[in-house]
Image 1 (spheres, helix red, strand yellow):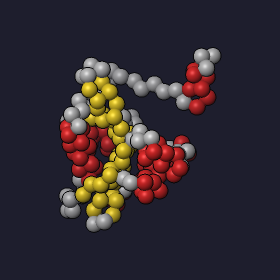
Image 2 (cartoon, rainbow, N blue to C red):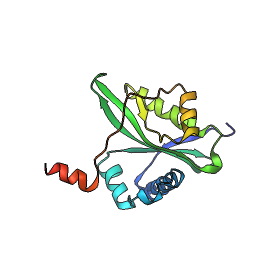
Image 3 (cartoon, rainbow, N blue to C red):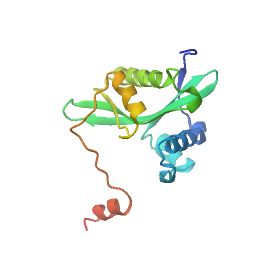
Image 4 (tube, helix red, strand yellow):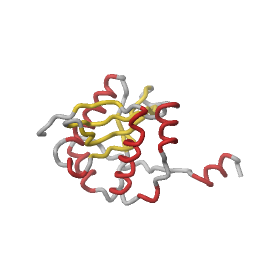
Length: 161
């Protein structure tokens, strides 16, 4: 890595930058139309309600990558873990070790907080990322499938209809 990144936690003033990273990630994942988040919503949930955290990898004063994460809980381990929701490195900075540096920083945060694990999901078609994660020693959870309720289906379930 030519320039080692420094890491900083996002502040409220970074809300627009966080949204831009989310939109850039969505474009990479071919999911641009799925982003409905806006600055007001992100500010409320990240900074007011403190439901997620964001770190930036900064090189020469430029935010080259970000990670959005939050705590989850493992009943089997009896302790919290970190769940990485999003990791993204700007295209022009990829292949320079910044993604690995972000994951190393997240692993350090997990260890500092005495978390039992760091985990994330990856789209099945994203072979470059899958290969990268496997090269780091990450284990694919092939016995698990993610399920989700959203929108009207979630509301309907909440009403027990």
